[in-house]
Image (cartoon, rainbow, N blue to C red; front, top):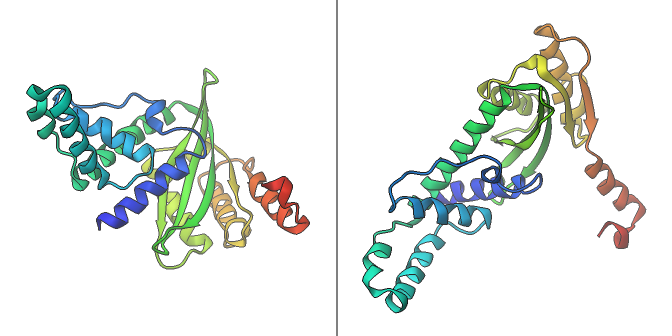
Length: 239
């Protein structure tokens, strides 16, 4: 279970890096006032940002203790009291992620319009994931662009499967459907089909909630460039 959590959160960090740094760089993370608990969050955040295994927390603690024996022997017990086990690091990263996500949800309430981008990939355990990125703008023209969620797709990965997870994600984030203006996908049939693809199902969903037909579907330019580069064999340019 810890291995699966480690992989999932590492994938979150990787995906979020594609649109910027971790959300903690944009939103103020809430950490406890307890001096012994705060180092847990600081180190765990650094481990997550560097996509390192959670088990390295204990190694970092051992390094702290060895250094304290040289620089400040009288403070050694303080370092020994810091818990950085793999379970603790996983728990702290989960808390930080939940805190960042909650602040993003609160900021999304002020959006005048927003769009989503979907990127599907497969993890090292052959589990398919769909990363959902959101870009929104409020009445002050402040633009927010973040990773909204990472959706595990267990079993099949059809357009209906992806749309079902996306629908749940949007509703759980309390985003109004009438503010959704566009979606960007990789152009796969499961994404773009007008009947059973995510785009077609999104249009059907918007029509049922009374949203005017102003929704735009966009084929991600990065995927087009990659496909073009393979066809033209312009390796020296694309690399």
